[in-house]
Image (cartoon, rainbow, N blue to C red; front, side, top):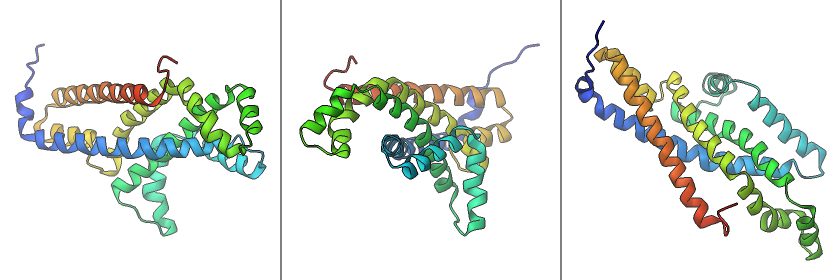
Length: 222
């Protein structure tokens, strides 16, 4: 049995692929920025002595990390309207991705904070800094350096997981692939092209994060 590849048959659908790639990039940038911010806040919250704050952060993290992303997405898109909160497909997809990355990155960042020598905390206290000031100005930067590769990998995983948001008709890359193959019947070519694009996006993300690392940390070798 032989099969002839026909990538030329996908040419009429290139605008859909381009729009899907752009939507995926926007989702990734938005969810990465807000997800890492949320993760940092939760990781910091788990280091404080206030039991109620640690409980809230821990509950959120465990809830997200122990439920499938697609269930979280469906809850945001289909469940929240029952409470009176209606979101567009893009808003729901972005929110679900932010919440997902926030929970996973919180544990990664907390590991970096926990690895901080106690001497750094004591040095901050000796300088008259509050715990919050010590965390921001003394602890966070070295903590990020220690766990930076893990953070990068998690962000890429979330980008790849954005394929799931096509289930709520958000017109990102996988939605474009489904659209193209359903009309051209070139399933093999459509999904091979999609896989290649995701691969290129992942490589591009690693390059961007590597560049950020060089300019953000004094000693990028850590």
